[in-house]
Amino acid sequence: MKRAYNFNAGPAALPKAVLQEAQEHLLNFNDTGMSLMELSHRSKEYEAVHNEAKDLLTSLLSIPDNYEILFLQGGASLQFTMVPMNLLTEGKTAYYSLTGVWAEKALKEAAKIGETGIINSSKETNYTYIPESSFEELPSDAAYLHITSNNTIYGTQWSTFPTNVSVPLIADMSSDILSKPFDVSQFGMIYAGAQKNLGPSGVTVVIIRKDLIVNNPALPTMLNYETHSKNNSLFNTPPTLGIYLLSLVLKWAKEQGGIDKIAEINEYKASLLYNTIDESNGFYKGHAEQNSRSRMNVTFTLQTEELTKDFLLQAKAEGFVGLNGHRSIGGCRASIYNAVPVESVEELALFMKKFQASNQ
Image 1 (cartoon, rainbow, N blue to C red):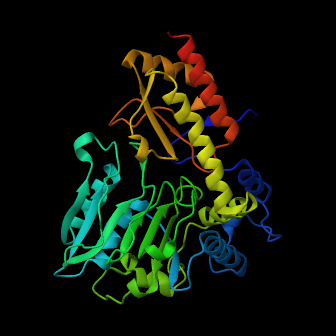
Image 2 (cartoon, rainbow, N blue to C red):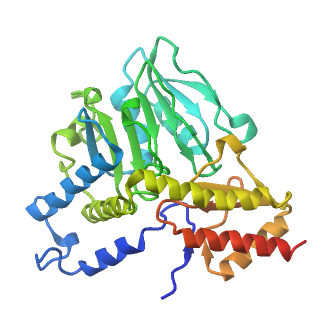
């Protein structure tokens, strides 16, 4: 079977080797006579998978000992609520950097819980850039500072993260976690839906500094980080298959050479497409400003809507999947997460050049 050139924004491409390994053990996991989907989440066989996933993530991201890893459900969208419920205390204000739709949604949910503020924004240009600010002197009432590290819809990404922040720095890293090295200790908490770089949909990874996990009996049990921390994310039945696939993706990442090697490959893939855009003399136009360009989501438009429509139709006929831009801004978007092969990106760059040549 010929695999599609998968540029979907999420759920996104998974490594072929991961899918093949999962397929091999689908009916009989580790000689149990059962699929992993059929195993009890209290069994020693599943517990080994669960803990290995945590160990692999710790190793790949160099997560310090004073952090807890949680495997939750509900996606990043549930974290928009859980973060303020657990970390926004009375008399304090949660500050948000607005760099796209997902940051807006996180702010909207936090405002239902307590006081919020916008520390900076690039909304006035339809989120074409990451605003630069000094975060060393936040307002005295700040509870935390929230950022969205990569903005899938607009194709922008933080190139460096705020340092010396006086309050916990919280990051939604759903679309670029594990794509480049970063210092976990800069953050109070990181959360990420797995369905872009870590695995399939259904699992949310939370990396939280232990001192931020507090006993708050007023919180609903399932919305309290302490509940999941005390129970190794096994308070209720977790998404066992998703966590198993996450562990396989992490093994694959380690086999690729770890996060440094993955970052090198991602830089190469992004440069292929951005160079094609920049060298097109305006035939293709990138949405994001150059110093804010994402290495995960390359967004661009063509000179007319008619040309854009033709581009997408011909791309689909050639086996390229998921190149439509988000409905809110239109155009085109190539999501080139970790598992998207270099060959797929090379083929897309070649197709873009051919399409330009035949339409000028």
